[in-house]
Image (cartoon, rainbow, N blue to C red; front, side):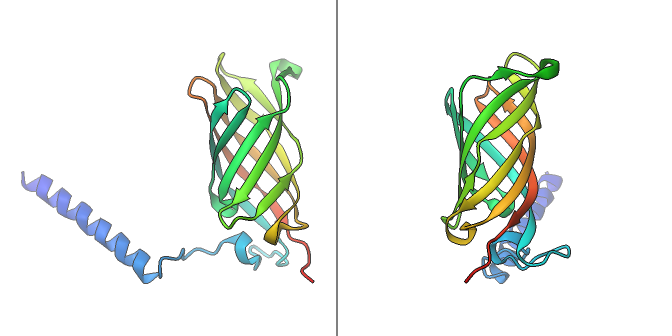
Length: 176
């Protein structure tokens, strides 16, 4: 009984400490985000920065997903299949995809059609082994932006869900 009370008090104390830390930060993140200010990090020149995060989506129908992106390009993302999957070399399955990405600030990223190469793990589970994505513009701060992102992840048709880890680099156009 005493151990349960101590555990409850410890959890409550931890929660209060977390709330106080967030409040002392003014409700703002204390981490430096690469994209919003494009200040550069890891020796970047201030116009090009590394980006990374995760994407999780659910299938709305058999051809379209919708979900959330976290990390440097956080916001909403959807993907639409551009035709039926194709058999690739070595038993891989190839998906042609068009993305639509809106950041939490309301800016959009223009993304060229992409090709995802997957390895089937079962009838409904696919490991995404190569999935390069090219950014070729956007709106707001991403007007004239370019960049390349690589993805790894999984598509689970039995759960109608996807999950990806993205990493890459985005370069903003010079502002006049």
